[in-house]
Image 1: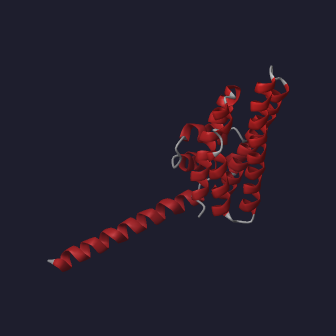
Image 2: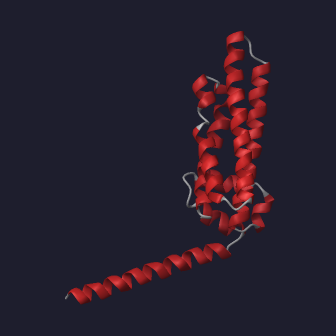
Length: 175
């Protein structure tokens, strides 16, 4: 009786391995919209992931590695645009207290964006795990400006938090 269950368990394990291998092999061959849909289905915010990646025409012919790089580039672009908005808020502060809070937000965000840009260098060196770690750290620091009370950046930061959460999941598919 033990042999029967042992054989059944072995067959089950073999079936799972074969199914998993087939699933990932298929994803490796996908490009464009099917790849975006498959990849984003592994993320926490698939709608944000899909709409953001589909907004870049390069995604239509990208494999998983290039799609991951495009996602990083899009996040860096959005982070730089948010940094520019934070700088405008510093310049338009109505009081010294407001100026100080907004400057702290800008300074913190500025150094975080630099780190996010470094993640792309690690990505290009095929150090996906390190790139992933840096994106995750960036994501963790995104609430800093909101916690300071700079509510004007809430929409942008919320988008960045969602998209960089998705990027962490996407990068994880590479290692």
